[in-house]
Length: 33
Image (spheres, rainbow, N blue to C red):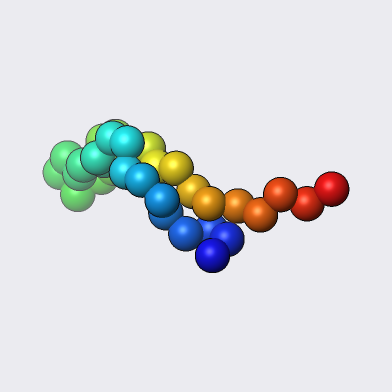
């Protein structure tokens, strides 16, 4: 389905409760003309 995470490329992590590095993911999307 559209918007579904297909693959996690890089994990994100938290540092002191804040996002230190957001994760990087591949997301499925429908191709519309």
